[in-house]
Picture 1 (tube, rainbow, N blue to C red):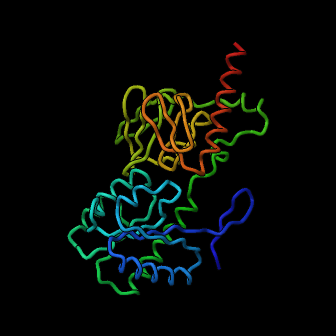
Picture 2: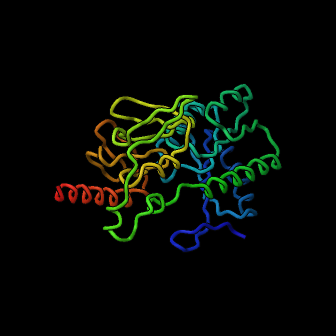
Length: 280
């Protein structure tokens, strides 16, 4: 029985992207065979691919970044730990499993929020157990994934109703026992890194522990989540293409699946502000 999710009322099968990154082809082939066999007995459709270097993994476009990654540590060029740190900047939710003959890196694995640490050699049963847990974790993450941008903003169908909606002017950011008021108009963009939200504002950076999903719900229709790790204030957009949005300060990536929604919402933002100017 396959696991499904719903898009616009239609049922779609879940496809899990699983990558193996190891400089030894023999190891990649064996792992791929074992993972493929295990997936065929699971409720998921698995898209499995392999790479031989960390640089190759980091060069993948956003839509190809794996949901589950089996990563070696000893590799030419960037090693597994260096690769993992850079990947975490792109994807906080990726399920990272180190596969290595070296046990001494286990404590560093906590720094990059590794899901598991498999020390070679290991039994097929252990690999299956870890993969099962990773698939269960992926399923949990998908159930709590961000809603579509339309669901986040909950636009009324009628444009006149939208004009009547009042947008929040500020949010309260809690850091320890201190709560700070941050004006939404001052936020250029927000990003997630190491379980923290970093607000890039006109007055500098503010860091706090939180979820970008919650921030999306607080900010309203003048903000758009271009990528699972980035939320931008449309007020500060200067230019964009299919992969990048350039802001007054800095730039952020746009995932392929979010690009069309971003363009649509940015056009709506421009039209709203033109209307406001005409009403004055």
